Image 1 (cartoon, helix red, strand yellow):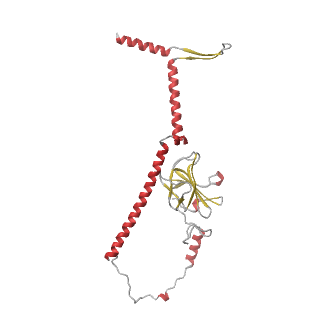
Image 2: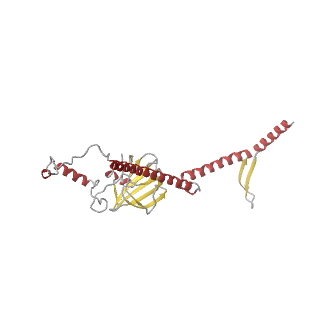
Amino acid sequence: MAKKRDTQEKKKLIKRLRNHYKLVVLNIDTFEERLSLLLTPLNVLIVGGIGLIAVISILFLLLGYTPLRFYLPNYAEEIRVKKLAVEATFKADSMEILMAQQNAFIQNFQGVVDGTVGSEMPDTSIDSHVDPKRVEFTRSEEDSLLRAEIEKEDLVNLHPQFNRDNESSYLLFPPIKGTITDKLNAQKQHFGVDIAAPKDAPIKAIDDGTIIIAAYTAETGYILQIQHDNDLISVYKHNSVLLKKQGEKVRAGEAIAIIGETGEYSSGPHLHFEMWRNGIALNPESFFSFE
């Protein structure tokens, strides 16, 4: 009896879900029918479920792929923790190098104290086979031409005050090693080069300078802009994490960001790198070999 009753209840429920109802919208003043819909409870449940799934999917996409995710309480903390982890990694690498240098110094100093430095003694005898007065040095024509060619390229300068006056040439560090996927093209408003590199690769400052912009934009994601001497400005776009803040001083070769693909104009992990001087865009390929 109980099974028969349960079966009857299920049939009644299914019948109720399939019953047809008419939803009518009337004009109160004239009782004119404006709109009518033929509905069943089952159709209402199905359409409502699909609508709820669509709303949840749209919210997920907005929070997952737009700047709105930065308003989530835990996301900003995750970015901060990631930044701290990257900084800790660089500090650990620096400490490891420093410890290796200290160990090498201690070993060399111990060798000096023990008198075990080197197995060959230098020739300190007064009798020498070389007459210093006869030693002459003349710069060859090829050497002079090579020096002039290198100085014209503005890539190397042995002056101790390089990059610190208007007359000196540049000794710059490449921001990253990778493959150039898009070259400078002023006609297409592309004033830099796009460099594809491995995920989480560090981006380095090309020279000493001051961070003048450290921000996020919808088009180019996380960006850094550094003011260097000699009116030189370098720009780094589409980063995933910024390691420096606006107003901070940076040294040449120091890690300033992590490569990423943030921003609407990014189609994969890469660095968009620009160089400007006196309002003119420079071609980075004239200064660096990124391969």
